[in-house]
Image (cartoon, rainbow, N blue to C red):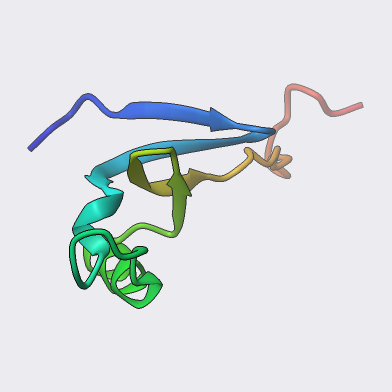
Length: 80
């Protein structure tokens, strides 16, 4: 089990990188464009919710959700 996770920022979003795979690995034949149905199936299989693409690789990621502040209604330190 890999406890150290790689993070990737893309625009305003942050992702945990699950796997990186060469684009060529998703083509039906050498020299073909990647079959996006294969990419989607692999994404689901590895548990990713987002896929980024570089010139050479697909990057299968888990989106890091923005934190939400939850007020503790039982917090008596801030009571007036």
